Each structure stands twice: as structure tokens, then as C-alpha cells.
Image (cartoon, rainbow, N blue to C red; front, side, top):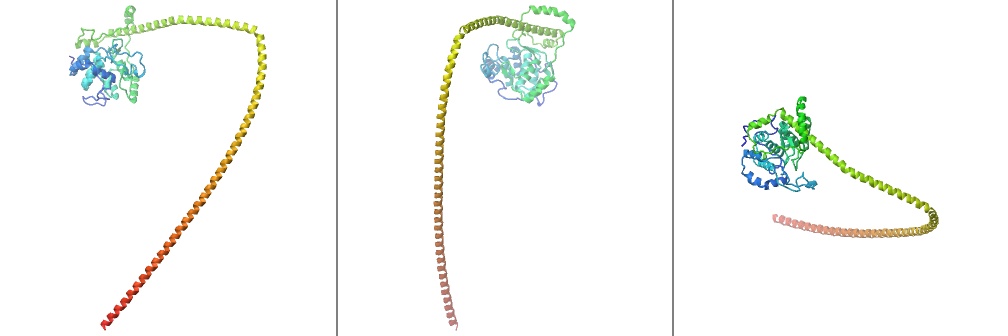
Length: 461
């Protein structure tokens, strides 16, 4: 097992990621799916490798050892398990919607790391691991999927010029450095047949500006003496080699692969000879690509040349046929010139007769049109008269109806006034009767009072 805590890191991060404190890492996006493609996530959860073998791994170190022994590429699908030929649009290869396949061990282990809820120390141990570049690649991919976009440049800042190489494609054939992989993580959404989480536009602009301000570091060229010493032998070897690019040895193909740290330290302490070999290998691959392009262009030219010859022959045949047809037409015109003149005269006479008939027809049509116009005008006049008469009648009816309404209103008002007068008379009579009764009562009361006073006076006397 690889003890990460005591390993000396190959590269140190210049500054800690901003916005994060302590050993706990924040999770950005969906906390259940790790922002993975739904097709990839369903295949990971349903794969027997994830459900059976990875279920038994409970610790971080066990998962790191499993990555070391099992991961040979960083593509989401195994080679040849997913067919996307002939698919376009949303069902194409990039979107990952159309068809599934056998999900790779790399993505199964990546989701297993997500289930462990890594800490900052564990994640730093992944990206600074010295045993395998694939352990580091999965650590960087974990950062790309789970960390906030504004913190990505801080995480990747110390590794953008890392020259450690790895083959990221299933089956081999796509060798790149760790720095190139991280630059593609920051500037591109596509990663083989899946998509990374989208980065907001303002953050993406900042990342692009920093990438432009920080160009890639080129490897120092060899001296003239070293080129003279190794150039001839390298060229002869390149000519004898096949045109297929070299594949990096995978962990499965190297059973004698040791896990000793001293071996990896020696590998990291590469001298100038290793850089020379890398330069030669890259030059060789570039020359092979140029040779392939030249061969393809030659084949295209050869395939085009017979087609061009056939086109030329067909054009010549068509030209000769057109010339013969023209000569025949001229001869026929010479022979039939008199017949044509006669026919022209006949046609001219016929045209005159037809013109006369046409003029007569036009005159008759014009007379009939004039008659129709006159009839239409008379009809319109009659319709206007009828409309005017109908309008006058309607106005008279409205006037009569208005007079009748006014008369009715006057009658109703007169009746109401009569009723009011009757009511006033009745009320006046009632008030008079009340006054009379009141006076009678008062007079009776006065008489009674006078009588009582007389009695009192008599009694007192």
C-alpha cells in the first residue's frame, strides 16, 4: 500500500486555494451525482465492478492502491464498448445520451473517491502522488468535477507546466503531459465522450486571460554537438521504424513494475538525455504525420486524375456532337429556306385575319362592358335612393316615437301633479279639522276651569 502522508511531493502548490479554510472540502453542484453525466453515472452504479469489488474497499489507501494497479487510461468508456457511428446532434458521441457501454475503471474509482468524501489533505496527496500519473489524473479530475469553478485555477496553478506524461486514451495512442491535460480541463468542456460541468462565463474569461498571460514552457533544445552526435543514428532508426506511434506501457503490461519510491525518484530526476529522447520521439511522430499527409494527398491526386481524364473525354465527345448537329442544322436551313419564306407569308396573312377578328372581339367586349357599367351605375343609384328613403322613414318614425314619448311623459307629469295637489288638499283639510278639535277642547277646558273657580269662590264665601 502507498502511504501518502509520508511521501515527498514532487511539486508544491504555491498558495492554498482561496475561499476554503480547514481540512473539509466544499462540494460544488449536485452532492449526489458528482455532476457526472447521467449515462455514465447509471453505468457506474450498475456495474458489477463497482457494486462488488469496490464495495469491499473502505479506506482511502485501498482505493489509491486499486487505482495504481487497475487504471490504464482516463477515458469514461472502455475501448470498443460504445458505438457512436452515424449518430449526430444530441444523440452524438459528445453528449453521451444515445448509447451506453462498459464504463471504465477510472470513472468507477473516481465515483468511489467521491463516496469517501475526501478531505483537503487526501486530495493534495492524490495530486502530488509519485507512484503513478493516473492517481494524479484522477485527483485533478475530482477537482474539476466537485470544486467551485472560481477555485480551479488556484488548484491547478502549480501544475500547469508539469512534464509528467500519461496516455489518457483507452487502448493507447494519445500521450500528453499533466500540464496539457490540466489546460484542456480549464479551457474545454469536452473530454472524450462526456462533458465537464460548465464554468460561468465571467470565471471562464478570467481563466482564459490567465492562460494567455502564461504560455507553455518549451523544452530547451539540444546543442549543436549533441544533434550532430545523435542525429544520424536517430534518423536511420526512424526510417526503419513503423509508422504507428509508440504506446506508453500500461501497468497491466508491466508485471515487474516496482512500487519503490527510489525508482520513482530516479525517474523524476531525469537528465538531459531523457529530454533529448523525448524531443526525438516527438520529431519522429511529427515526421510520420507529415509523411502520412503526403501519402494521402498523393492518393487523392491519383484518384482524381482518372476522373479528370474521363471528364475531358466526355467534354470532347459532347463538343464533337454539338458541331455535327450545328452543321446539319445549317444544311437544313439552306434547303428549307424557300419553304420557310412561304410559310412566313401564310402566317403573316393568317396573323392579319386573326388581328382583325381580335379587334372586333375587343370592340364587342368593350360595348358589352360599357353596358354592364351603365347597368351597374343605375342599380347603384336605385340602391342609394332606396337607402335614403328608408333612412328618412326611419327618421320620421323616430320623430313620431319621440313625440309620443314626450306626450306620455307630459301626461304622467300632469297626473303626478294632480295627485300631489289632491294630497295637499287632503292634508290641509285634516290640519283644519285638527285645529277645530283643538280649539273646541281648549274652550271646553276654559269653561270647566271657570266653573270650578266659581265653585271654589262660593265655597270660600
